[in-house]
Length: 157
Length: 131
Image 1 (tube, one colour):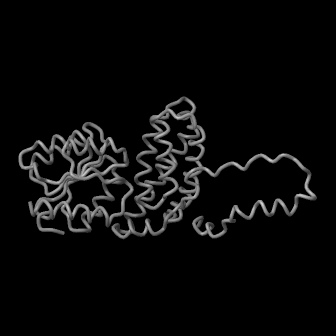
Image 2: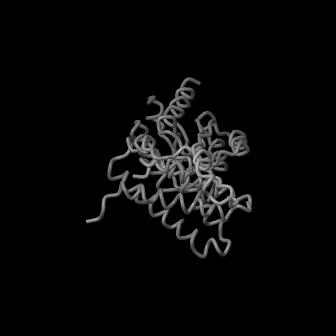
Image 3: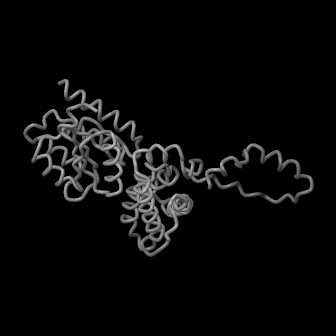
C-alpha cells in the first residue's frame, strides 16, 4: 500500500550536497528551480488510524459499502475533471461533488484527498486563476486515493 | 448516554446518504435513538411532530438549508432549550456567527472524530437536562 512508501522519502536537504559532488564533471547548464510540491502532498493518502476509528462504529459489510460508494464518487469526479465538465467551465458541479467527497473522504482517513478537494472547491467559489493546477492536483489525489480504497473492497465473485 | 437523549432522540438532517448513514451508525452505537432527515424541511417537519433531545443539522441541503432549518426549529414550541448542533464541511467564521445568531448551540466541522462528536453531544445533552 502507498502509505508504506512514506518510509522511503529522501530528505531534500541532501540534494545540494549531491549536486556539488558532481559539479566538476557536469556541464554548466542553468538548471530550472525544482517545482514546489503541491499543497497537501505531504499529507498521507490514507491515515489508517482515522479509518480504524471510524470503522469501529460500523459493521464490516457497511464499511465496505461506504468505501464502495466513496470509490464510485471519486471515479465520477475524476471523469468530470478529465472530461467536458472541466473544459466547458461547469466547475460548479465539480466543486459541489468535491465538497461532498471532502467530508466523507476525511471521515475515512483519506486526508490528502479531503484537503485537495476542499482547496479545489474554495478555488472554484473564488474564481481563482490556479484552478487548472488544482484540478490536476485533485485528479492526482483521486487516483492514489481510489487505489487505496479498492484495497479494502473485496473482489466480486 | 444520558436518559434524556434516549427519551427525546436525535434528529439528524444530512442530505448525503453516505454521511447520514455513517453519523447514524455512530450515534446508534452510542445508544442514541436517531430520526434521520434528508433535508432541512424534513427535519423541521420531524421536529414539529415530537420534542427531540437534540438536533444535528448539516448546512448545505436541498429544499431548506441547515441554517434556515435551525431558525425554524428554534421557533417551534418546546424547542427553546433543545440543543441544536450544526455539522458541516464549511469552516467559515461568518457561517459560525450566522448559525449562532439563528439559534445554534454548537458548530462542528467535517471531518470529525466520532468520539469528539459524541463527547460534544453528551455535553450539550447534560447541559440541557440540568437547565
